[in-house]
Length: 318
Image (cartoon, rainbow, N blue to C red; front, side):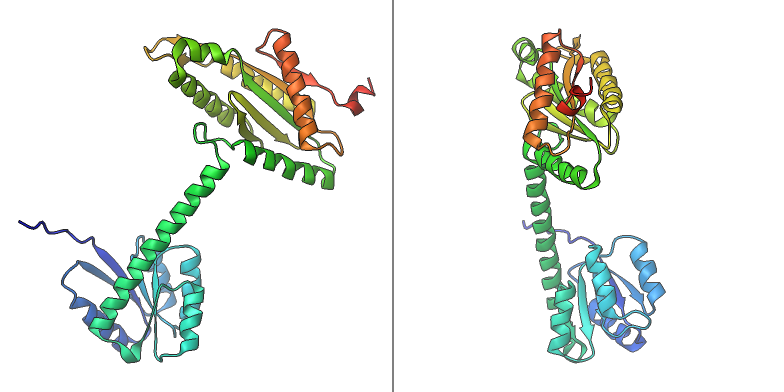
């Protein structure tokens, strides 16, 4: 026994200011019996906009000659916003119009002079197939870009991306003479967490700390996983004293947070942070090195603390 595969509902918007042309297209589409189709019609700009605003449209059949706003203009807008696939219908089979339509983002093109039920169905099927492949390609591209930019465990910027953000900020700070600070954060005794509770719990701790960082820094701050249990927090347009308030508050929040082992038992962790302010002309490597040196001093002094390391220009003034 063969199982019938149910075709999804297809919602098609017919955009044409000529009622006779709309009727012809509607008649042809109503002959399709292998799938359920809902037809919407629009002859004026406001009708098109209302149809698009109301929700999902699976396909737009757009006449090139529309009043007020041309079919090409509608095509460009719909394609830019990725609202729906568009097939352009034109009164003549101009190659120039066809090329322009495809360049603007149309997934199909059909002259009205050669319109027939068979050609219309063939064009629609090809357009929907092309749209599906384009959407999948975009999703794959976004996934690859995300993998290249964000740490897969914590969701924060990965090492390469956070260093890139730091270099961008240094260029801006040099240009506009702005201050900013950088904190290097490390989870205290993280190896003991892994040894005692296992690496899965260790991963849970990394995720929880990342979430606490994300939820307790300012919208303008930038956080990333530098490596292992180390994180970088960049605080733009922020002096050392203002940055200390932000990261000290974060340290306190992490200290009070509850972590859980596989049995559900609660335990606590702490973090140490090394804080340094960017110096004029300083590069990313130098600033990270100073923050790392401050972090080392924080651990030397007993951990669970924020240690500030003044730059040469500030030390000279003391």
